[in-house]
Image (cartoon, rainbow, N blue to C red):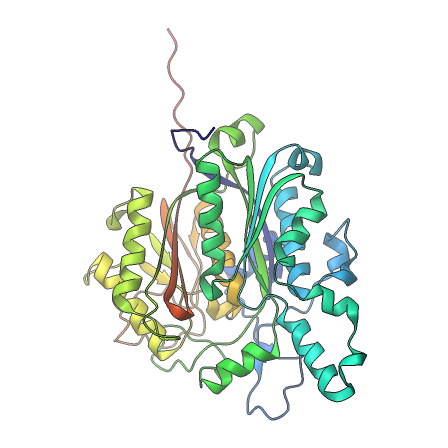
Length: 415
């Protein structure tokens, strides 16, 4: 039977695979330093493209992190998701048996699933014929593998494993799904986040739209030229506050609330009023007033349309005078698609627990149409209590999550 009083939900484990650091410790160092992952793409043949810079992960060794599955049976995105989940579980101080004995949720968001393998299969089919396609690679392609492989890695028995294909907001969708499940008492633990691997299909699509930057991603800058595609995974282990306290677990942050909407206004262009509505939904669910938000982790792609629209929506919700400082981690990580808002959520949790705001790098001059303090180029120390993470996606899929610093209740005096 479901509990009638929603449980408070906290983050006790983080797993990070990114271009600025594999493992949360290195990811934190990269955030503080304003490290950029931008470099020439090697994942696929870039001949014919005038420019091909991306945020590719060069130092990922799946055998280091994946213990029970044959990595050859996993596509690159699934390797990322399983590795990040393994990191998150270890970080939370849990063992596999504790997860197996509990009701669990695995929710992973993605844009492309295993499209990198689809690139390979298509290339082989065109050059050599379909009879030459590797059946092992073909079996890796289903997007559901991104979540199912995590359940298999840990041998979970009482589990719902879902893969959410809501494009570039998918990581936040997955976190919201986990928040609901733990609030309601449906599961004890939730492994939530997003994963995507760099692939030719998506790079080419953005390139044809004219939104790939030639050298660097410059969100909110007057001279911004577009996105850099990236890759990676972020997985958060979430549980009830009661469970975390009983285990003596370290708490990074509390998940206060989230908001989702889909305006379906345009295939690729964001809709300002809809983005603003999604922010209000998240703040209302969290029980947070706009004035209480200390900074916003923006979707911040670095395109002309997105940044102006998102900045306008922020002013609609927070006012024109002094909206919260608003940063874009994509300036460092590139756009890692379904992993983007999950990695940004991890950045928010670390910012709350470590007391700093990560920077928006590559920044020269703020676009007056954006008019935001984007913490240019250098991280700043800050006493943070509430942060907001925006995820916006094609098709008008918006997802916003609000996080808070966990503060233990003061001990009651005894007579």
